[in-house]
Each structure stands twice: as structure tokens, then as C-alpha cells.
Amino acid sequence: MKQEEIVFCKGGGCTAKLGPGALAKVLDKLPKTYDPNLLIGYEGADDAAVYKLTDDLAMVQTLDFFPPMVEDPYIFGQIAAANALSDIYAMGGDVKTALNIVCFPEAMDLNILGKILLGGSEKVKEAGGVLAGGHSIADADVKYGLSVTGTIHPDKVFANSGCREGDVLLLTKPLGVGIVCTASRVGEKTGAAMDLAVKSMTSLNRYASEIVRKYRVHGCTDVTGFGFLGHLCEMLGDSYTALIHKDRIPFIPGCEAYVEEFYITAAGQRNRNHVGAKVEFVDCSFALEEILYDPQTSGGLLVSMERQDADRALEELRGLGLPCGMVGEIQARGEKAVVVS
Image (cartoon, rainbow, N blue to C red; front, side, top):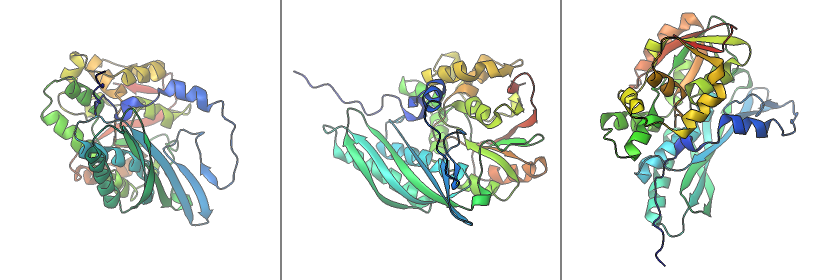
């Protein structure tokens, strides 16, 4: 019997995440844990857990892993590591240690695994952390990521739900990587668009986090599998409405054309189904809607900060070399959670 060929990249990254609706149903049934030192757990849909150790020291914990979204195993390792490390930076913390999480087919060339781990280890080193070990299992498909521990002062945590009326929203990376990776995987010539997507996905959010910490930040999250609109709705809760300026959204050039060819993801449609009723689009193209629902892998930080600080922060963020923007503002709660106009 002919052995079935093992395919490295079937389509992964944060498009492989469970849909937000299905996940919420499961989490809502779990018993709530009370510990006065658990500053942030899973109840608020934050990016990582924060546990207070002393009056001036707290531990930040997270983990993330997924299948490959690019064919190059070394680049995949970099992307998966940058994505996992991002949760620490979204909370305003610093990376200390990381552990590898590996699923790998026994029949696949181990040199491929070596390249994945090399890419990941280099990102942990760039983050200023120590790769301290890990765990692996044999699996039918490749998956890789990290469990990460960081530190932060208990009074300086960036919760995702802390935004205030009058705040300005900054986005530190361009949207559209899910769309671009989908187009590339089915054979579309993506060229410069894919190059920018890889640059974005492999760029640590460390540098953006260090910049925004210098200003008055009230809320922060990273934009990943639930897309820009999904993560924004988590930030807003039932308290505020976000007015999003459609002409200020940074996205990878070429995305609109790929959407017109229907190079979109099932995960993007799950995001639309989950939060679509909370969003009003005013004179927006279908392509822009899909870009805002598109699941991001190792996406940028979405930051809610004082209006007076936003211009200076944005100027510094632009120096990092990725498209970014002042994309909206926080208002009193209206009929919809998000208005894009």
C-alpha cells in the first residue's frame, strides 16, 4: 500500500483556532476560580494570565501553538514563536522563559523539525528570554509553539478591557496576513504582499510594547485569530462604542484584490458570524469588511490610549518600519459596539 504523502503546510497559523463562539460556550461552563493573587484569568478574554507574587512583582503566563502557514520551516518557527511571545507584550510584560510545544510526524524528516526549533529559539533570544526546554509528541501533522513566562509590576498590567471614553486606538501592524497566506497557498502570485506578511508575522511586538509603555495606555490586546473586529469587541465589552476610520486602517497592499477573488478563510467567516451583529459598516467595501474580520497570525497590538499621547506614540511606532495607524476612537456606548465609516 502506498504511504500517504505528508504535507508540511496545509494552512494554519491563527486560522486554525477554534471559533470564538464555540470557545465561549465551553469557557462559560467552567467553574470560576477565585484567588486574590490571580489578577487576570480567563474570564475577561485577556491575552495571558497574571499572578501576583509580591507587591511589586507579578508573573505573566501564556501558551500558543498552531500548524504551519508558510512552507519554510525556519520562518514558520519564527512566526509561531513571535505569535506566542506576543501575549506577554500585549499585557505590558517582559519575557523571561519559554518552553517548546511540538507535534511532529515520525515519518517526516527531522531536519525540518530542527529548522522549526532554530527559528523559534532565535526569536526567544531576541525577546531577551531563555529557552528552557519543552515537550513533544508524535502526531499526524506538524504543530509548533511556546509556553511563555514573563514578569510585570502588578500595577502596570495592560488589561484588554481598560479603554476609556475619549481614548484613541492605535494599531501597530498591518492587517490581511490571513488573506495573503491563503492566496499564496492556492498558487496566487503574492510577491511583495507575502514578503510584507512574513516581515509582519516574524516581527516581535516587543518593540511596539516598549514604545507604548511610555505613554498613558488604558487597554491593549494583540490582534490574532479573532481578527481586528473580534478582538476590538472583546476590548469594548458592553461599555463603549469604537468609531473606526475606514481610510486609516493599515493593511497589506493587494488584499482587496485577493478578497475579490475570494481568497478568504473559514476562520474569517466564523469571526463575522460571531460579532457581525455588533458592527455597522458605513459605505465600506466588502473587501474592507473581510480584512477587518480576517484572522491574523502574530498580528499587531491594538492599543487604547490617551488622545494627547497618540501622535507622539504613532510617530515612534512608524520608526519600526511596519504600516501602522491611528485607526479609531472610543465613544460612549451606542446602538452598535463598532461603527466603521
